[in-house]
Image (cartoon, rainbow over all chains, first blue to last red; front, side, top):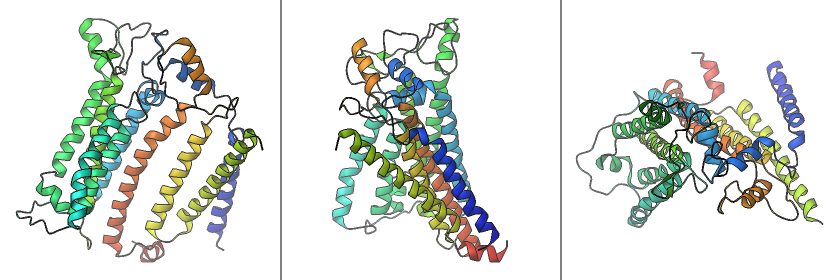
Length: 260
Length: 135
């Protein structure tokens, strides 16, 4: 065995040992959780604490887009950069041309095509439901967008990628939708700040509900329906960005020529 | 066979299988020669670590009552919020895993395109061959 491989193996064993040492207190979960988690659970939907609460019954979405919203903003940036890097790598490997004539002979059998025609609108509806109810039920923009991106993938496999291009689902349009989603996320980030500027009161960037020193904020209910301030808008725009970004990547992936 | 013993036993089985998975996938990333197998091992490793993160936030059964997901399903009175905080699991690891999954998918797409470039350049994805070719 070479020296490099030996060093690698020893490093592997030592790092697993390190992981076990640090994870010792979590090996079997206890009945208590950390104080930070108790704080999140108590304040996530608690009208008795108006300056602490997010007014969202779903604690995970409250953490993702309010308590630790800046983290998620930068993770969206990482997602954006990873997809841009992937498309930049493939930029000379594919040709996107709309075919003039489509006989419908491509792809799988009639049964599979009919089932896909029925189920793909359902998939998109389920994804939209997961994304737009992210502040009430398990889910959110990321999961809803990933669910919606399944529908174009099935269509590509069943009908061939040219079918999507004849339906005018091109990478330019997906890029436009994705930019719309990212611009929406940016605008939602500074929405409370703009409200404060126009009203002449103190508000902060990335603020959602009213705070002690910034009594203005976004409403938690719109026409009697719970939207949890910025959370609903963040979920909507993140869903747009994720779904269109993955659709664009799938189209490019299927158009890449095999010989390069 | 109390409920407590069964809980501990099942959690230890889960934990040891996660650790075996970590070791196997790290071995796959470093010692498997083919690029695609390295990518597959990397995705399994990230899924294993996500599961481990969610496992850290789990909570033991209290008084024969199972832990609940961190979602308030009843009107937010003081009693229901106290009962919720006593039984719900830790939401923070789930929030961190949520974004990590989608970003992992985007990074996997990037690696797939990188594999295309590698294949177009070297006509092979075997790392031993690519190392021999030197540039």
